Amino acid sequence: MGVPTVFGFYWIKASAPEIIMVLVFILFMAGVYALLRYNQFLKNKKIQDESLFLFKMKRLGLSNFQIKLINNLIRTLNLSNPNQLLENSALFEQAIGQFLRFLKKKGESMESLSEICKDITITYERVYSPALYKKPLESMNQVEINQLMYFTTMDGTVYLGKIVTRTADSLSIKLFRIQKELKGLGFEQQVTAYIWRIGDAEYIFTSKTMGLNNNILTISMPESFTRDKEFRHPFLETIIPITIRKADPGPLDEQEEVPGTLFKINDFEAVIRAGSRFDYNHSYIISFDAMDFKFIITARIIANKTIEEGNIFYYTMKFVEMSEAARAILKRYMYEHL
Image (tube, rainbow, N blue to C red):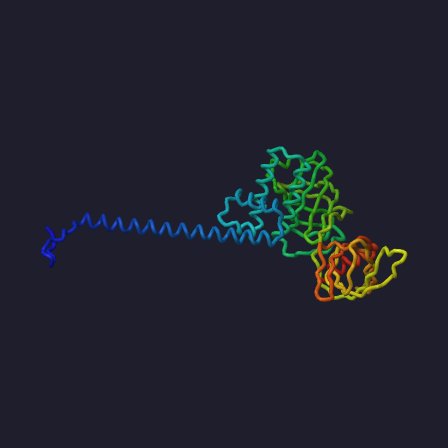
């Protein structure tokens, strides 16, 4: 029976089951709409997370290979938000262990594994090290806890780990390998170790294994090491008066000293500001005083173009010759002012 209307016809009255079906349909459509909105929210959040992640990667100065390495670790861990890896070094270490096992199964050469471990160490340092620059080590007793290092054994195996304890006579390294892969370290043997410190250099030394407990290897503290492949420092802004003269004047040239300003400097280059034009075909001697030392450095112009501001010229110059004393004091100056 219908419900009478003012238009003279009857409106069909829905039964209880029909009302329930309509309500269920409305709820179903509302649920579908909510799911679609939530799915779009997740997609937008993922895009934002990935954009933030890429921004952080570029800001850290990682190479394309190192960024690919990080992406592989994220896929290995199946992380929904890639930024989780940047905030938790334990996740990085967990994924690296799995990655190294994969490389071992592929049969990579010792040289290839060493280069990969070096890139892993550099990546770890750039991501998790709070300090951009570090003073050179005078002794391996000064190396930091949690510093990554990798080493090779006499049989050509490469291991990667993290320094967890340090004594006057030994270093203990937590290895990123499962225990059954460490059987080759169960007896005393010589190893060649490598440490890369951001803002400093790569250190190489030989040592001997002293004992293995689960996945923690103890090696003897080295008495000496080689400091190799120094880290290139960024330019340090300065305002230091300098004089510039030709290093190779011709027989008819007047030896003229031109005043200028040391505008920027790092370990290998300088940006100078002067009121005269210089010739790209000549070397120049830059002289200035800093830290109670008289610097006399031979340099060549390497900038692609000269920036001119009125009668002021800026040149980027590469150092080609300086004394060992000057180089040591320049490094100390950089470390004290960065």
